[in-house]
Image 1 (tube, rainbow, N blue to C red):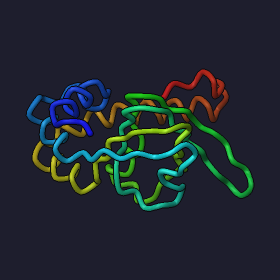
Image 2 (cartoon, rainbow, N blue to C red; image 1 turned 120 degrees about the vertical axis):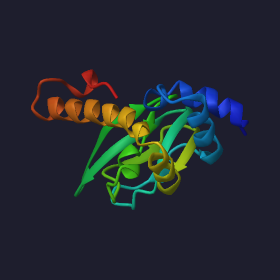
Image 3 (cartoon, helix red, strand yellow; image 1 turned 90 degrees about the horizontal axis):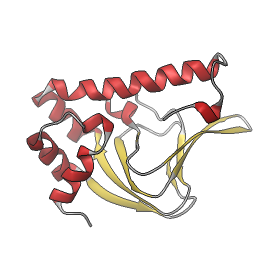
Length: 154
């Protein structure tokens, strides 16, 4: 288990929290819970209620989209990646399944805890907007064929 200080140092390395102050990171670190998953274990399923943001402390996860019998891996995320951020910004249901590609350790921040922080300091939402904008742009490029799945940056 990480100490609060270790969580703060880790959070500072994550793009969406890079601009947060030490105080903001401290508050966030106290609310973040450490959770683990074994290889191939589902973290959440497409269609599940969106209840938290996850930060990858160690290991890899697969982001998978399912439509009927078709199953497509959209991305493989590694250490210091985040996922589930759409849930904390109001998207009610998960748009993809995320599963552990190997043993993973995550920090989980609940939607309620994050909303409390945003209400206190609305500027904290802007770095997340940047990440979402990049991901939407990348998904659009992939969809219209300007890039291949291998060129996509998460």
